[in-house]
Image (cartoon, rainbow, N blue to C red; front, side):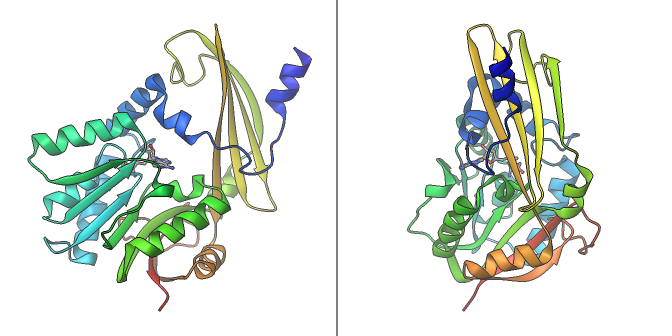
Amino acid sequence: MFEQLQRINQRPEPFSVYTAEELWNDPYTSQQMLTYHLNEEVALASRTRKTIEGSVAWLQTRFGLNSDTVIADFGCGPGLYTTRFAQTGAQVTGIDFSAKSIRYAQDVARREALKINYQQQNYLEFESPQQFDLITMIMCDFCALSPQQRAQLLRVFHKQLKDEGSLLLDVASLVGYAQRQEQAIYEFRQLNGFWSANDYYGFVNTFKYDDVKVILDKYSLFEAGRSRVIYNWLQYYNLPSLTDEFERNGFVISETYADVTGAPYREDGEEIAVVVNKRV
Ligand SMILES: C[S@@+](CC[C@H](N)C(=O)[O-])C[C@H]1O[C@@H](n2cnc3c(N)ncnc32)[C@H](O)[C@@H]1O
């Protein structure tokens, strides 16, 4: 028991374990996630309907979306953005490794007679003969990746973006970092049954890594016959650190916003949204 508790409370090296695929593809948990995505009133897995509509309206104006625009949405989930992009007439690709979310998105596209190219795969390995006018990655997914994975993804973006194309993404800011505390909690059926239909015990250890501005929420989950640990990493940025990361990878930030609805950038915002272009 003591050793088990030591393992639960052990602080790993930043980004040393990647469990995103288990999180997003576990049959039970991914169904729970899908339910959260589709809940239009809460901003847990996706933003609220109102915010999504605000984003798409702004993107449509800002990037002049029409039938000539070729868009890819990385981590598209159940297609809340891709569906709306396609409704503008744009040619849309959605990439996500969650089988449940992609299936849902494909059903919506079929029902609404929208031609959307959905790819169920790890976006770090995405390759296509097509190049895009616009690549989106929304809901701070970029922050869940390690520095090496982010560099890999930026290579994918660089290759898949047209020279004059734009990348739009959002990240968590240092304002959000400052608001979080380290903690260790233990709860029966932690998150109200989110992790399993069976009875289970969940430990949540939150670790802050001040030198690199990363937070880990480490979920150690125990039920009869099954135990697992899910690592939720989040990299936090300020404008200089974000600028530096893009510049090191061949991009420049050309516009900054408070969020992906195009609201004006604020120093005290919990997120930063940027439009990024290839450095030429
Ligand atoms: C927080 S959700 C956001 C979904 C969508 N962008 C939205 O805002 O509605 C993150 C999505 O990224 C997907 N995802 C995470 N890591 C991925 C990876 N390495 N490859 C492909 N999809 C990934 C998950 O399956 C999930 O659908």
